[in-house]
Length: 256
Image (cartoon, rainbow, N blue to C red; front, side):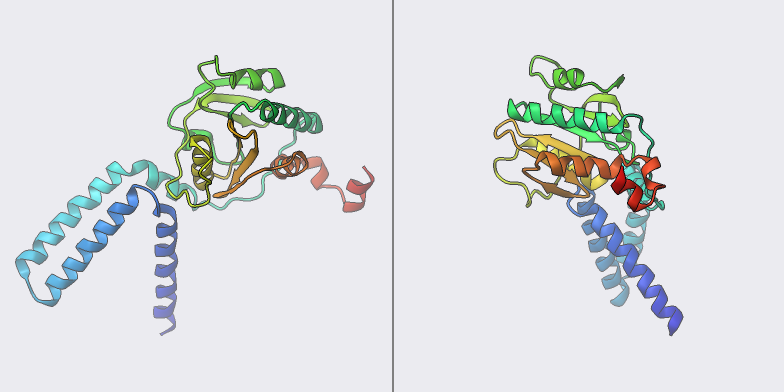
């Protein structure tokens, strides 16, 4: 009895994980199709229809192989999220200066109502979810970040990707969110792309609205709109916490 209960719990967790990952994606239609085939198979087995039962078995065998081929990117992302992650702190020289510079750039663009999309990597690589991008590997600077999003440049429509204090890519095309219930009507493709990327990765995505100049942050599938500079710094600091500070007691951090 105990083993059967444990088995049911494990199966329930697996089904819940798969449904949460595939819900709202194109793969969800296939999941519904497989459930329909399963019901037909059970119906044929219950009424003892041997021809229909054999036909369903052959179709399912072929469909399983086709699913692995067609939906390989989605399956790869789902499996990658099964790995155990720990909080990763990175030692970044002159972190405070970098934080001030990126905050200054973001809110300078917001003040001028220049639309922008900025991805700050955490542990997942942007290459896992960006369909196309232009690799840069350039040191971060306010001037470079702001110039990329000028409408006269060919890369201003895509996302800029930051890793530590480097701009590693620009013009990145991010996956669009299918569930847009939390997006206001005034929010466009940039907000939808930020939300979609945050659902597939642990990165922090910054959006600057071209219409309103408001700064939004997408993280873990949640979009927060109208983020002020102080809160912005807090969110960025949660990823780029210098390792040296994590080794000091609280009284030392307060004193510093």
